[in-house]
Amino acid sequence: MTGRSVDDDAVANEGYAKALGARLRAIRMQQHLSLHGVERKSSGKWKAVVVGSYERGDRAVSVQRLSELADFYGVAVSDLLPPDDSPFAGGPTSTPLSRIVLNLDKVSALTDAHADILRRFVSSIQRQRGDVGARTLPVRHEDLRTLALMYDATIEALTERLVRWQVLAPESVIVDSEP
Image 1 (cartoon, rainbow, N blue to C red):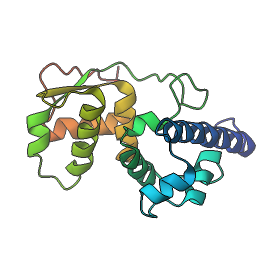
Image 2: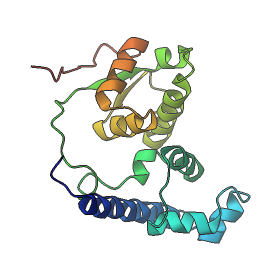
Image 3: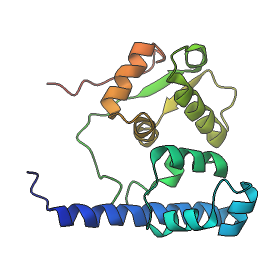
């Protein structure tokens, strides 16, 4: 047992869904789109009633659909997540700080079937930062957390995958969490 009741978890999940919904609504509003405008602009892929239920926190959104919605809005997935100072963002972790810097030439050369997620993620961050011509890409902790979500993995497991793929630039620093 974790000491938390099922009711506490349900309240936390509902709170996170509401905080996520508020972010989704804010991004949509920044783009001057109504719910019906989203449906029209997406040629019906995104139904107004579905997006509205995500925004109200009435309906859970999968990581895949969240990623697709981020692509539709032209923002990084991390922009859709509640801010780090939100009580629902997960709070500080005990994970030691690491510095992850990707070698973009090595990322683009990957042949692994799962590498497409990483390439799309990198492309999205580059567009967001205006860093399109760079050869390396420093990955902030919150972006690493988002990428780990997209791979349905922990940050540690994702970091191991990046090491295995040999896509880390020499300036990367991995701090082992084991004593």
